[in-house]
Image 1 (cartoon, rainbow, N blue to C red):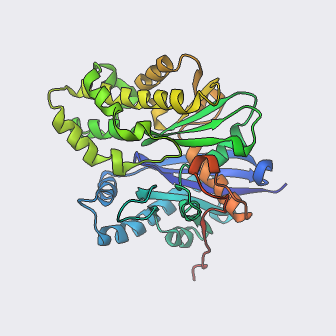
Image 2: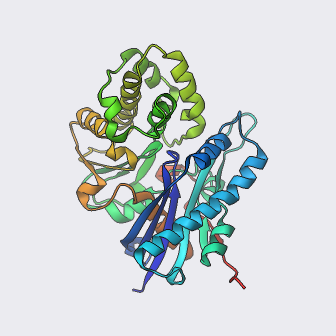
Length: 384
């Protein structure tokens, strides 16, 4: 089989950076073979991060802001794609195509009185295609939603291709939001299911950003010095989303800046250490509750493999190991991969499936009525 270079681009709800993975891919479908060639994480500078947060906030967003930000992010994604090629010593013209998740601005997984099920990711693919002179696959979520799904999570298909084996595995990503993919041993795709467990790093990051002025709690050091406030933790665990039956997805619209601002105002008596410890345990406990309630009755969990930025939070990892004593809790690094690059690799693989006309949503993850080909394909016009 011919190997092709594909770039995957990802910017998650944690807003810590734009991830770009240069991947070598052979085949497609269950014959897919994936090799990570190189990876870069391009930091999102504070002015751009604040624009994204403002665009996600109903009180501060406006159409002019989103219109401009769509193109600004397109240039940023193009720069990340060029950077990973330069670092790898691969010419851009050697890349077959780019898969870009974009930046989620708003996600409505369930219809409400005045809104339809819908989602919006920005980071204009035409800008990426023109700047890199490479076809771009983007807007992966919308076809699944058109087919009655929630448009997320999307990585379960790629996780099935890469991680299926002889163990009952939970692939837990802890980005801004936590999401899990359950892959029973010796499984078929139709047996895979996935959902968002609740907050990941989003609340933790916003707490330390607001109170200390740093973007995240490095290694969980602030939380590690605090004490958990059990009353607050019970109140957080009572938020209906945690107990909602899958399929389910969530994001910054529930657990973002507005949520944290209110949380801080109502708990001024707590030190930053105690508040960080409590919201860190909230992430850990919400994961454990969802495992015990929605996974354990179906699958005897043997391994939990943690990816995303949360895997580097040692306080959070210690909490998870204590709360999940029945499973071997590992990180992507423990099995030869990298936590940082996992989702960018996934969108390279999803782009490859799209370019081969292959359906890549998982019905047990999104709740869609049928399997569909994901993504819009943007060609490029060669610069004069």
